[in-house]
Image (cartoon, rainbow, N blue to C red; front, side):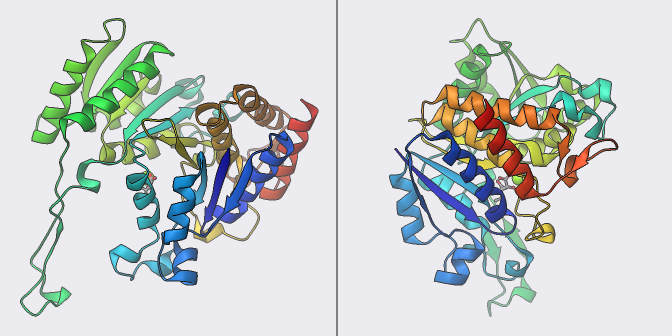
Amino acid sequence: MKIAILPGDGIGTEIVAEAVRVLEVLDLSFETESALVGGAAYEAHGHPLPEATLKLAQSADAVLFGAVGDWKFDTLERSLRPEQAILGLRKNLQLFANFRPAICHPQLTHASSLKPELVAGLDILIVRELTGDIYFGQPRGRRLSPDGAFEGQQEAFDTMRYSRPEIERIAHVAFQAARKRSKRVTSVDKANVLETFQFWRDVMIEVHAEYPDVELDHMYVDNAAMQLVKAPKKFDVVVTGNMFGDILSDEAAMLTGSIGMLPSASLNAANRGLYEPSHGSAPDIAGKNIANPLATILSLAMMLRFSLNQPEAAVRVETAVTRVLESGLRTADIWSEGTQRVGTREMGSAVVAAVKAA
Ligand code: IPM
Ligand code: MG
């Protein structure tokens, strides 16, 4: 089994380094190979997703990904921006099913911006479709003025589209995930305005016929955004499109206290996957040893469970994280009065020690 390690930019290199230390101490004899991706790859090779990096990801059984992006690349043409690396990997590896759990760890209830009683015990699974929607719709572009000058631009457009098979497969993923939980799915759409999402709703209802044991309800995205902060515990599995899922998963993440705690998995039909924290590259805190490595370490646990068939190792890692939180260690993003503030590296070391002790 081979794991591709793609740390990327910003805090990506620091947090992935800690997850790799945890992987090593598990002693599982996986081969690992690292490569540059995102802005780092652009600076070294002139492209955010070099051929060699893509090949490595394609040949690996799983990819551990940090984060990409930095403001210094904001003026690059779109095809060369760091974000194109993650979008390219998702598309090329057909990683259509994105799992973003939003779990409120009992030790962190007070780190949430919502009242503790609203989030205590929160456990939502957002299933975001990841390779369709307005992110990848054609045609797209800017209508340039006759001389091609940006200043003369009169219009820009992106096409929102979903095909039936794309909706069907994410629907199956969501209903099957719900079967392992409380058997409830909320499909989030905008069927009252958008043809794409009326179609989404119709196909969801069709596929649901195969899952009579699972409850399905539908919610408009604006209402879902409101309900998430009003009564988040009413949700269990939320399935939605690429664009709405991008927004709602950040919102749900924050309910749990810190986006620095949340892992994610992006899987293809063969359960091969890319695992990354739900947060970004945070260039403002990069290189300062203050980023929280736990989301990446928990992403490693998801990798062990979903792609590498090592459920016991996954539990060991998750239990170690719980122990470390119980011991009161906190990175800056989750620190509160009475807990002990530590850096990225120290947090990683604490998890390594807890894994060893388990
Ligand atoms: C995410 C990110 C990405 C997205 C960006 C970096 C392309 O926001 O994974 O949620 O929009 O999907
Ligand atoms: Mg996002």
